[in-house]
Length: 97
Image (cartoon, rainbow, N blue to C red; front, side, top):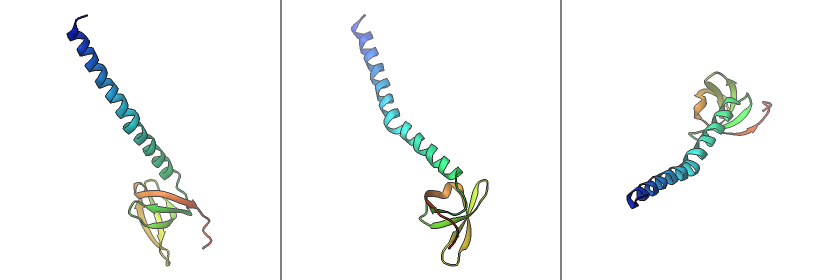
């Protein structure tokens, strides 16, 4: 094997290693996080206390296919939101308030 061939192989192995590091440190964790968010949004149910990605804290009043109706504020104003706008589910509560 010539020196030039060895250099080419080492260069190729370096790029494979860089891609592997990026995959395991950046791509894979982001895919896992996205999967968890999707499952959380699909499992929304009436009465859940949620926070939207805009910071609005509300309770789920109705769940539709791609949207949810949230009750916001002391007068229980109902506002529709797309499911992708739900950032976190804080707790599951009964609607007795």
